[in-house]
Image 1 (cartoon, rainbow, N blue to C red):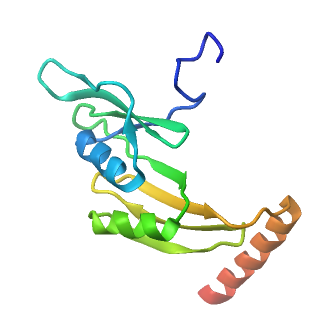
Image 2: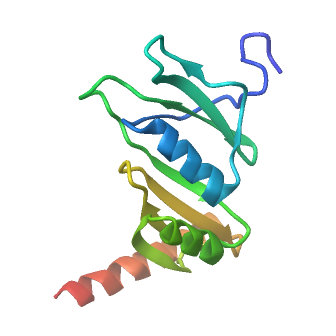
Amino acid sequence: MPQWQSPNRSTVTPIIMVKDAIKTIEFVKDVFGAELVGKPLMRGDGSLWNAEVRIGDTNIMFNAPPEGHEIPAFIYVHVPDADAVFANAVKRGAEPIMKPEEQFYGEYDGGFKDAQGNIWWVSTHRKVMPAGEIEAAARAFEKRMETRDE
């Protein structure tokens, strides 16, 4: 690991800033099996300043910002079983956005929104596709959507 990079952290670390970050941390622990990285840093008033979890090989930071500074996120997570994770999230109160289904780009994915407004898209990789094949599939998908909307 380069000296300029924090130990035990990936090169890019998303930060989710929501009012009840602790509730969201518990949600990702329950849904994704996330593990806390170190002890959360609390403010003097007892509220969360910063916490970090690890899902697979990726860390995500959480912060409970002052009112009006919330920044929910859209996080795409590869999982072994998108259906099981989706069902578990909905069981734990997430709002379904799209039930997982086969996609033209070789993934089986779908998403849900947690109570703090973060969108979690879960994906199980199904097929490696060359770029040209993905592009052709994208054009066919667009064409289907155009005729559906007419």
